[in-house]
Length: 116
Image 1 (cartoon, rainbow, N blue to C red):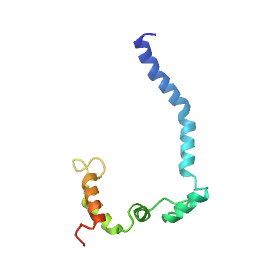
Image 2: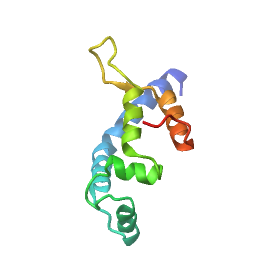
Image 3: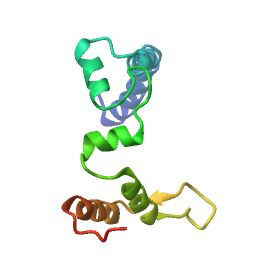
């Protein structure tokens, strides 16, 4: 088989394979992500972090789990302080300055940030 033919057949085979599995795989993923926790362990974890087994996890519940001891209001203030506006003022979404936010949150955890 020539390299040119192989170069044409490989992407074609990939497109055909994706075309065959996209629907069943997508349906499976939708069932997995929408399904309520069924196992006892899953239900206990949801209860421990403050999330209802059929509800989305709320920010304060995630914060309690990820960084115990941090005040959600202070973290929200840091996120607001480290959020930049839209590109050119009108395109895209506001975005966070992740390295700066990470440093500020580490300072909050360490207790080195100025108290409000």
